[in-house]
Length: 460
Image (cartoon, rainbow, N blue to C red; front, side):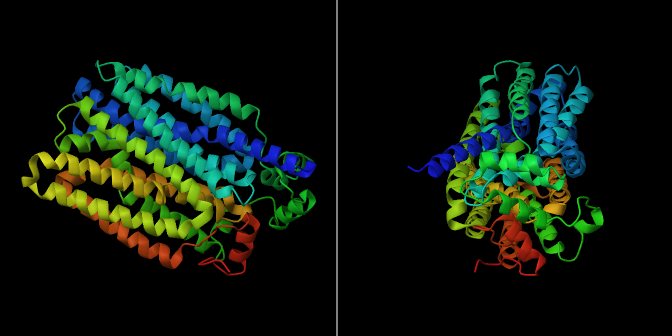
């Protein structure tokens, strides 16, 4: 093996370590969104909450995420990608401990809101950081590592929920244990480098070269610095530039994909899976949470499959396959709730449908939304454009989560899931006509094609 090959192999290992540590933000994202699904059953019983108050407790995180995402673009541009993740680690840890000791519902909502702020920032800064530090041939897999960690966080939260279901106050431990990965992320990020693209944007060329010397694999560092510099006509970016006509196709893709990711019902499953299983006939909180662990496990396994396929099949084929599976499973789930004479079979049809839905989501909209918004925006506006798409994502998330129980009351359980199925079909049509294929392009090539008006419907 040549010296260059040894160096390339060592650099790739460093890139994997960097991506893994940054993706711990995804683990926290997943844990703190998933843990509420089990905890809320006990909080509801202990405080005798109505459905409306339950929706408020669940959606407090989402309101915080919307606000956090709104400020995250400016934060990432001013402070850097790395420092922004450090701040989220502090917020995650503070919110987890505060939730564990909350004396009443208003205090719990306030602490969950703090966690939401962290999630809003981390949900886009982590994939942005990984995207900007990764070489193009493994960028899809490494950015999607963040999504894998989100799914791992969710399944860990389900396991914790299940293990702590024997008493009324164990929900406090469910929340408090989230501080552990927050502290690990904080320590890890202190030692990681800033992304070379942000450093070039700040005029710190020598520091950017130093980072690239540690992560580049057989690439000309001076040429890469020059390519990055050529995408920057000005160090500062205004919101007006985010809406420039040549940027709009990418901007609309991010926002509309955010809508389809949330309006197809994913977080009604994540937040309310035990509740849905109790709707279907599971008799106890503990058994419903146990069934939910299967949902989390399938989510992790199929996200691993997606990571393996993203840089082989591409983004669009996986979107078609996954969204078609989501539409079918949601249709079956709605029909199962509609046919009231299914009696004992209902809960098993429900479990099978939910598992198939999660598997389909995990290979498509789950990782691909976050991957695409880290790829398709020009460097100069990337932080703000990703922030806008992330705000849209959390806004749609909050809307769906805050109205799910109300929708099942008004439309019925069957009608609600049929509606999600129809939205999934509409998403397939939208992806066919408007979503680009980015597999194999560098970020600078994607920007050049967008700037020239050549939107990447297919690779040539």
